[in-house]
Structures are given as C-alpha cells and as structure tokens.
Image 1 (cartoon, rainbow, N blue to C red):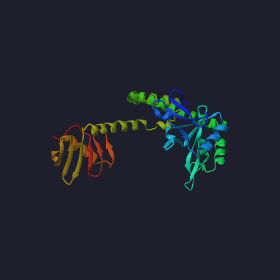
Image 2 (cartoon, helix red, strand yellow; image 1 turned 45 degrees about the vertical axis):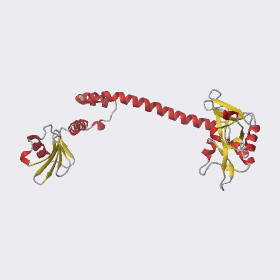
Image 3 (tube, rainbow, N blue to C red; image 1 turned 180 degrees about the vertical axis):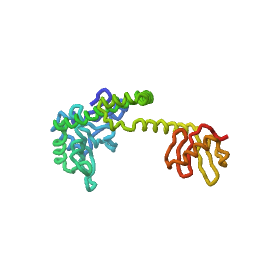
Image 4 (cartoon, one colour; image 1 turned 60 degrees about the horizontal axis):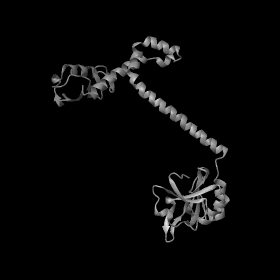
Length: 290
C-alpha cells in the first residue's frame, strides 16, 4: 500500500481494498464498488483465513455494470510484498474459472497457461499453498541472481568507462610501444607474456600502419579507382570519371599500377594501393586526374 500516492476504499472486508491513484481520484471513489459475484466467495475466504494479507483491486481490475463498478482482478500482499494475483479467467473449455498466478507457480509450470479451476475450495488451497513469503532457497536464488547482475553491471560500466578513456591514449601507446619494441618486448616477456605470442608483432604493426594509410586515402578521396577494359583505363577520381589511354595516366598512377599488377588479388602494396581484382585497382595516390 502507498497512502501517499493512492486512495483506498474498503470493500466487503477491511483487508479487501480498492486502490486508486490520487491524481485520478474523483467521483469514482465514492461510487458503488464491489467484488464480482463469482470472485467474492474466494476473495472473502482468503481474507478471513489470512487477515494479515491485503487484497487489492485497482482501476484495471474493474468494469462497469448496472450496479456500479465490479472488481474481478486482485493482487494479494503481505506487507509490501506482492504474493500473487487472482482474477476471473476462463478454464480449458472456455467456462468461467478462478485464475491463480504468481512467480512460484510460473517457475513450477513447464507449459500451458495460468492455473485455473472452477472449484472455489481448490482455488483457495492453491492460493494458501503457493502464496507465501520466500523460502530460504527462493530468497537465496534471488540474492544470487541479483549479485550476478550487480557484479556484471559494475564491471561492464567501469570497463566501458575505462576503455572510453583509454581510447584517447591508444594511438600514442601503440606508437610508443612499437618505437621502443626491443625494450617493450623484453619487458612483456619478463612480465610473463609468451615470446611466441609476440612473434611477428613488428610485421603486423607495419601492415596495420600501411593499410590504415590506404584506407585514409580512400576515405579522404585522395586516391583513384582504376578499371582496365581492353586498352582503356577507366579512372574514377574526385574530379569525375575518365576514360583514358595509358599514356594519359599520371606518372604516379602508371607506376603504382605497374607494381600492383605484379601482386595477387586482394593484396596491398604500401604507398601504392590495392589490387582489388584481375583488372580492378585502388591507387592510393594524392595526385589527381586533371
């Protein structure tokens, strides 16, 4: 219950309450509100057997009838803990039935819908059996689950924050390590890093630097795409697409194409570009076609 935000109206018994947010309260709180005749025997039986429980219905649990406002859905609380919910539902044959729902029943139920019965005595037994405070095992499972979520959340948040900060140092750190590779390699080995894991580091860094420069040329439109068709060179540059004879190519494009023609497809050459296909190239040249 939350008396600060809600108004409450007792129904058939003191612990059977209608709840309405104060911001919405108006004439309805003073109108005739009653428990649905089908639900009333079960609700009253529970209220008598468990006077420490509070059985609450709200706006979304009522509908209007000729006799006023009729409540058909109830949440059951012990203190501030919600134990479960009962409502007017439907059985397997589509007939009216008592539907009983809470986390414990949901965990035990492997398939099918919410448990329901037309028998008020059976419904009462189901509620009394399954609506209660957490067992030690349930409380521990909840604590374990919350601990797992909290531990992971704290790590993920702090890890993400650190990585965002570290990103600002990344280029500097990588450059510093590679410029001082002999010293840094030995320091890493002394710290327990396997020497095998460090094999080829300089070559890998060189490839990273070279391909980064080629990508920058592509992103900044500082290179040209070349397609060779017969004797024609189709060159797409920032100034437009050009169809040229070989002797019309700029010196640097000719030189780069000559080198790139000698390598395999999907291979780069530093400061020259990439052979994309048999007759397709990207030349990372800053000299543009006029």
